[in-house]
Image (cartoon, rainbow, N blue to C red; front, top):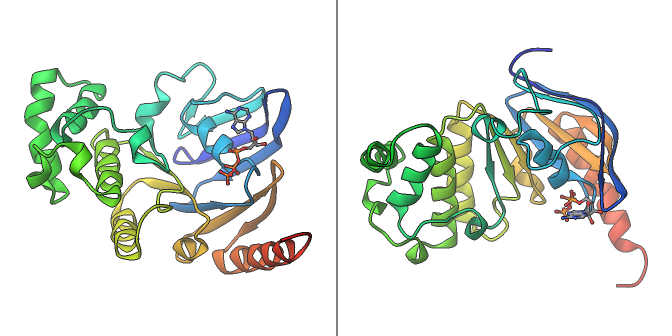
Length: 236
Ligand SMILES: Nc1ncnc2c1ncn2[C@@H]1O[C@H](COP(=O)(O)OP(=O)(O)OP(=O)(O)O)[C@@H](O)[C@H]1O
């Protein structure tokens, strides 16, 4: 196993007594990994194991050399998480305060963090947002802020759980371009399959197991065919 990979060894996860992930083994070493699958297949549960939001009932999860068991407090700094809805992530009234909070999490004092929030925003070309009340940002701008707030903590891995679902096409493209420039390992859950065509690898989860895993063309094609057939079955 390389130190820059996420390793799952026979991981079983139960939620409310139901098996959600079933003896799953995976080594994720590529820099851009897409995660797809139908609603309820276990995608969100899986990535929540990577940053300690959930812990495995059986098996082992190792993230860039760090065993998830016993490291739930450290993992969030190593693994940044972007949720579908930015309102679930943003806590503070202004942009600068939100970024400063991340810098505090990374070990800076409140004063240092507030000062450093400006150059941090400037690095992403958003210094002019500093004093903006967060509620005046658009959905896309809020999502961009969430990504900045996570990246200033310099995580090794960035997890994105359906980050584009409420964004228009130009905003989505802008965020895709930003993500493409990042040094971090990126794991992205997406229902918009086109977002993953340039990724290194796509994993298709089905009922808590890996149904297919490999190059985007092959996996996305097979999943599209499966989903179309499933959608054509049963009552409308
Ligand atoms: N908070 C929860 N408590 C109990 N069970 C949950 C919880 N969240 C999800 N589950 C269950 O875990 C299973 C997997 O859900 P999960 O959210 O991981 O799937 P998903 O592939 O991300 O789905 P979606 O595409 O709809 O977001 C589902 O059966 C779901 O009902």
